[in-house]
Length: 204
Image 1: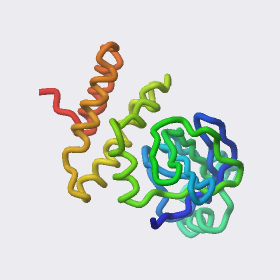
Image 2: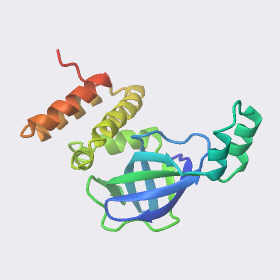
Image 3: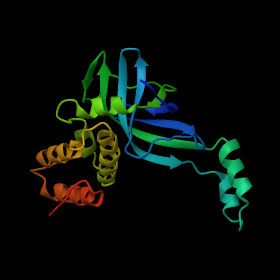
């Protein structure tokens, strides 16, 4: 499986981990993307990117007061200065041998472990396993922003499934979400409104 190196772990627990990488790095994954950390040849932890942030930089604060800013300075800042970008990743499952589990990993990854992107065929395999149980990890998060992350993930994954000939995947995902939230009408309504904005659900 081809993979793009994203960054290295700064901290981790059973639920999520924080990853640092260089802000100018090409092909950075987007919010909601599925990523993984290989603990060894037979065990990997999968996660969904739930937040992306750039640490405050005193140099940037000074530049922000200059008008206009020379584009050469901006490029130099992004390419040559070590400005850290941090991503928070929610654990949503793991692979042990050839088996995929949509459960919290039995052990978290370690500091400086490498976070990599998932190849399209790997995304299709992970997100199609079982009954899409990995989505419940997002639904169980208390932050209201998790609904936005859920929509971003479904949009991102649906694009990959469409390219792989599985155009109805998002419909299956939405039906699974409706089933899980059938006893929580207020949350379900907010989720469906967000999915409608993402063109993943037609309320009509």
